[in-house]
Length: 481
Image (cartoon, rainbow, N blue to C red; front, side, top):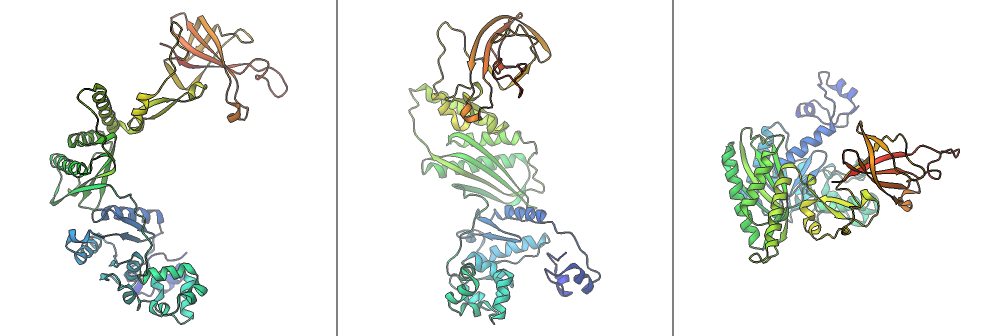
């Protein structure tokens, strides 16, 4: 058992990370120990990253205890780099965290500086001078590499940088040489933000936290107008919108809605978020208030202008799309579906259910098989997602229908029958294990019409390993009108 993290008091007592617990207790008998919880640490780091989204949308994790913030073009919004650095460190320190932060032209240089100093700001191009005096352990390389550098007499990063790159690569590998170059400002590895950068962002900061629903609703309305104005300049509409609410205690709540068509009207955005907020199982809790509300368009599309004066179909499609968006905002986009035909003779595979928001146009133009004039429908109005078993006491063999069956504990006497319609399964996909089905359209004494089938053929497929015949299994697959 090793020490994974220590506080300042433990450092003053002579303890260090990686020290065995038994040795640590011998050095400091009054040591207080807690079990390490990497999962909780990662959750806390993600929560802090959510809070840091208020400063820049480009926030990346640097596990186990670090964060990268790309503040290019953002620092002036907070009074400059020095002020921004103080805001971040002071806010986290007030919440009990030990914070070490630095600003540099490359992410690796900034991380290297935080290992032995805090609050330093390095101008672009001055990274080598800033990190040169630091010990080689500040690079965060593998322990074996750090030990090898010290044995070679290279105690500081400047000592390592003074050697030729090919000498370092030959001894410690190309990966370490690349890490060293990034720390010295010679190129940089791009960070991987936790969230993709939205196409458009508008936000409202409050000098005093807001808690009332009225102010929050009015803020969303004003932000929606600003967002639509920004998108309209480039002829775009929003397909995915996210509202983020930043509380004063650091908690962040995000709500997302999607649309079937590009949205270009602020009242529609406001209506979608009203539907979404009203349907939340966990209501939006302002706590001590929100000091920042942000509205972002995560995905946008170019708006295609259509004739709307004479073509009534365009108006109808717009109304249907708006209705689908409102329903999806309330109950979820995956619960509102449309069906598209598939080229398959298997009944349950002849249609594909897809989210209506993204496939409404395809569903409107889909070509379904037409019903023969004067003929009864071949498929039921209601088709079950999975066939349900029924009990059949006896049936005409080898290919006849049942005279009676029990479904959902109710007995039905068959008075009329149409069929059979034989459908063989796709043996090339099922390894020959699926049985042939004989479908029947039957009507009971009360006038209800069912679509039932026998799973397997008598005397051929319905046999055991010894060749003895097995009883057939019957299912109901749908209901006719």
